[in-house]
Length: 556
Image (cartoon, rainbow, N blue to C red):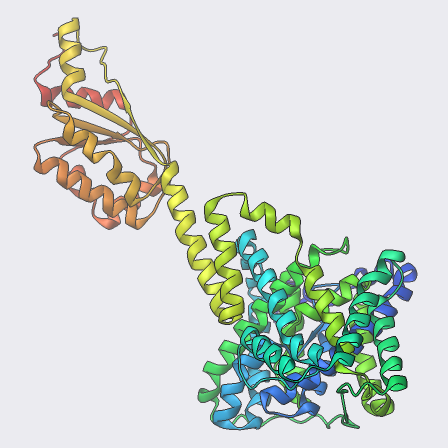
């Protein structure tokens, strides 16, 4: 390989690698980063265990995922605040796979999904998130906040988690179970956890409300013997890395593609949400994909499940005052230390303490003024926001985003079509004399200047006007102001030309750009007009030709 081609090949990869600027300001922020990492680690511990159990692969696999994927994504990812690990959304995708193929399926799927996400990073597909509309992001965030809160209801009330997939439905069933057998001591611990988490930062921003809440509630539960359910027994070690068995590779590609899509989507949305929570440097979408891809590969090799950026833990990290990726790395290292040194102590933390912390986090994720702004902006934006939020709660994240994007595309197309106008213009010619001849020209020749994007709706809008004009013999379509023309618009324009000519009206095209002429020719719209000599570069040329069709002759 020549040295001339080497930089071109390596530079796309170099831009994805860690750099010194990732830790800018660490000398000042390291105390807050360490405290935030500890806080997130405590929050992430029960979640990692719970997601591992819920997926069907066991608590140890969930914890391995949080440690390995969390550390790799923290180093290589594109967000300063992102915290990665197993998530509820990923659990929904993995449960049917594990039920059909067994727990071993998660390891090769994680590796393959990671390879696909790394490929997306190299191809710079992370920038596609820029096309996701703001109302969809806000609706997604609101829906996630509701799901997070709903997931905490069973632990908050001290009841068993109902065996249902939908978090909102599970929350309703949990409330029913609590009312049947109330545990008021657990409610007292919940109030204490929520009060400390929400109240201490109001007294002073530097107070780690969530960490203090966990410690205090644990102590109170131990002293009073409240009987709250605790985290329980933890695994005491991490497995040795090993390449998973890929078996029939072709059978793994489809589930790996779904996992890769969800990992990329949730990670990018989580990073984007975190960008709005603090003044930390904004995330790099392509680097975030690269980091998440490597995190999934490492997780699968080390015996973990697929991972993604976790909105709940990322939000806790941001709210706890983190400024650099040292916080996320600390969270992963803390979980590793817990596995080897403090599993017995951490196992005594009541789940209700963590539920209170996450309930406050869910509440803080929703910016009330932002929701109000979206709902009062336009009807279309409010519909996108509402549909995405409802679908996130009622269905799942992938479906919610798909529905929101589909509605956003429809609304965007409708709005763009509405900006297109066909403006009628008076036709005159310096080549003819006399008011009577000019009036005859104006009566029989009609010119339309089409402004804006040329969609089917815009093309057909003025057809009724032309048909209603009694004596029109020639229509000149001025296309020089058309900003965008697609195949559908070109086809619709051809149908309009055919309809007008069937009525005996001659159509002339004027001022189309070379790009638009090429598209019109490919679609077939332009060919009949070219054959008749009805395509012109300037308006005077088109008007001069129109004179031959209306019986008006220039002098001499």
